Image 1: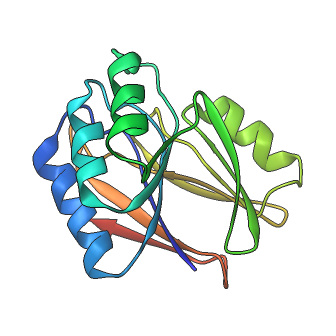
Image 2: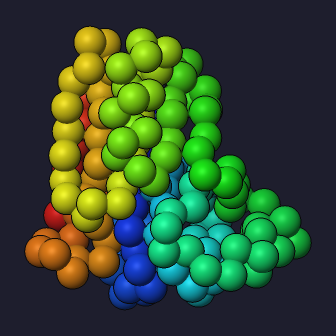
Length: 163
C-alpha cells in the first residue's frame, strides 16, 4: 500500500493542490500529514480532495477548533489525531508527529515500521534498525524546493517527489 507523506503547508494552497493532485493521479489513497496547516483553509482543501488524510497538529496551527469542526461535520476523510498518531496502515505500524525530537525517539523504539515527522522543513530520511524515519520536507517551498514523499508499506521504500 502506498502512503503519501507531506508536511508544513503554511497556507500555500497552490502547492497543496499540486501535492493532492499528484497523490490522486498516482492513486495514493491514504495520506499522512505531519502538521502546520497554519489556518483552517488547508484543512478545507484537504477535506475537499476526498483522500483519506491522517493529520497531526504542528506548532504553527491556529484555530484548531474550526479544523476539528470541519473534519467532524463536513469531511470524514480528514482524520485529525491531535499531537501524534499511532496507525496501522497496510499491515504496518506507523507513527506520525510534527516534531523530529519525538520522531527520532519513536523510530528508536522498534515499535514501528515507519515514523513520519516534519517541523524543520528539511527533507530527511534515516534508517533506525527496521524503522524508516522520514521528514518529507515542506509543501510551503519557503526554504527551497517544495517536496513530499510516497512510502510503500510492501517494500518500506520511500520515493521523494519535488514539486
